[in-house]
Length: 245
Image 1 (tube, one colour):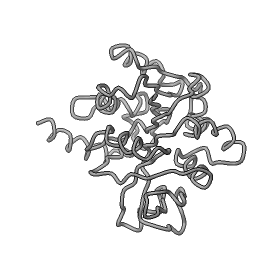
Image 2: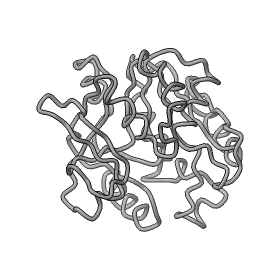
Image 3: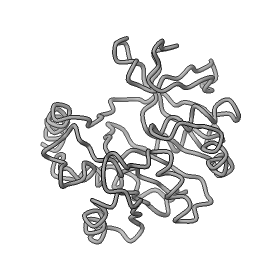
Image 4: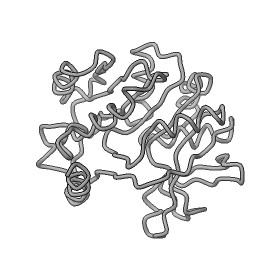
């Protein structure tokens, strides 16, 4: 299995912190966000390579960071330089798959989320199910559902439908940006894009695939921290400062 980290965004809501520095490398509890994610998996025999897809503006910063870490990290530059010219998450996945000739099972995650539990538990669930898998959490606040990817899930955890930022949410189950795609499903990526799959949000690929192949959704066992703006960044810093203290 390879791990693809989506880190090509421009994080405009975190300016000025991220105007000239990538959000996934911001410090949280004495470590970069990416260090938390990768170190969680470093002892796993399942992941043999980490691929960070960056925009051109921040690629050299990521390369400098990767140079001081494990040899299994590779940085891929998607050649975009502004928020207006970004490829979108699904096209960044396609770009990285093609550039790195990925033909294996693939763990995909956003580089701006932190977890209170180990990703190893998600991988164990994927092994148990034998299908592509996503995470899910219950969001009680109906107002927040309109800005999330919303899942419908049956009694066996199978994803019945997925919709990004719905006007009328069909459930309270939200899908955070952590996915494991089996190799055969990943091979359908060009077909998905050619047939009109959304490309901006990473969950759009789940929305396209779930009506064509089984996908299961693992209910996460603890909090997930999405660093989207300055307020959420400060809140996460406080959580991890207590954790390290």
